[in-house]
Image 1 (cartoon, rainbow, N blue to C red):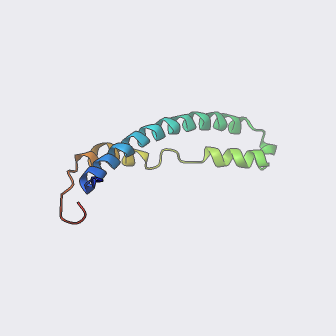
Image 2 (cartoon, helix red, strand yellow):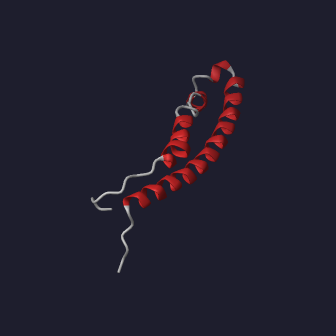
Image 3 (cartoon, one colour):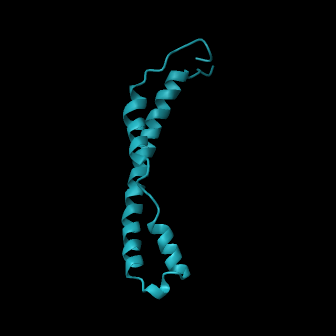
Amino acid sequence: MKTKVSRAERWNSAVKKAGRTLEEFGTALEELKEIQEEYDQWYEALPENLASSLTGVLLEAITSCDLDGGFGALQEMICEELPAIDPPRGPFFD
């Protein structure tokens, strides 16, 4: 007979999974920031007459991406706040 996993166990498992995923995301985000810096250097060195070219427009799009926006708050929530919650157990599908 299949044992039903409680909602609290599923919650805790999902929090752990989110933490692992966030760690992988953080690594990828750092790599993106490094590459973005390379594109920024290219963009800054681009001759003025190429600024409105397709290359210039694409470089500007990459360099203007806010790769820091909100990640810290999400990381704090997933790594600190969510694991600290001890979900209640109850009669509804638990």
